[in-house]
Length: 253
Image: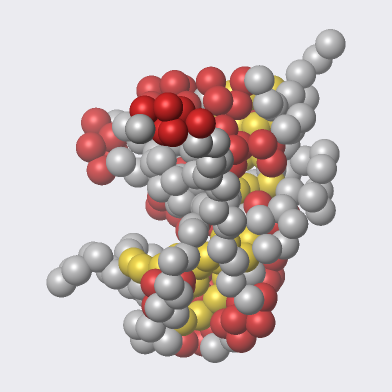
């Protein structure tokens, strides 16, 4: 029996194909912005016209799953839709609704897609092929990428979709040859410095910015604030802007 076992060819397990969502579903969501709670908040900061531009650029949608919820579509560099993250925001504060439960879910879950093989990509990844020379800034949250894009358009802002998100060598390949600045939330700088090693062999240049750590106090650190919080609420915004602009200058030979 052991000889028979040895003669059996070893079957290679083929990697499961990545699942995608129809682009029509994305396009159907790109409307009803007056009902969208995040749109309401951002419009109060930037005005409706500028907010509409941001929503169109990043293909941010509106969901009926919760009244006025936002959909952050993950569209890869080949314009394929990996999934969408549905989140609900307070239209006055711009903060996520976490009571009585955390209002966050996935489009593929809501659509009850069976055996969905999700491979996350960066939020904003679809912008990378359109603009190959602009330095990239990587942040954690999708909302932060939107807000930072308004304040510092000389960067192409993308989001990892969480502290870990799509921090893996496969997802990072889309940043090959780019100049990338990582801007972690307060308290995550050391963790992101470790993760930046994944990028060092891929990117033209990688910087992990500690600008938030340098301009924050103990209370702000304990809250884990991100750069969008400073842009919107902090008087030290100008200092942060100047620091980041300096970082974005190309390396001199």
